[in-house]
Image (cartoon, rainbow, N blue to C red):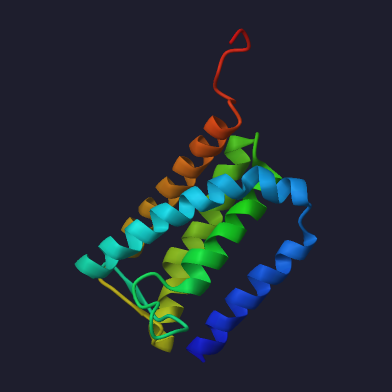
Length: 152
């Protein structure tokens, strides 16, 4: 069952790109790649300190699994930014809802299915992933020079 879920994450995420405009993809891809780098580093730390471990699809993606780290999270980031960028409080609310669902509902389901394990509490998981959302938003602002004064 776990492998089926991971394949679905991979296929559905990639398929959703067909519905994005190319300009939107280009605009938010740097933030998605930035988040992917952070996730890769974070997953390595999580593996070392047993915060969490998630099953991968392949025998070589044990630490940072391909469906989530390199496909699901970046593509979801692009979608969320495409609808909410420029409206920080809506962005934060959407991420808060999704992050609460992940930390308190989805991760426990993954544990019951045997595709995830770890010692991080749902509350700390929520704080961690919500802070990543804020950092990603700030990065996108920097990409678009949104925080410079109009006189620069």
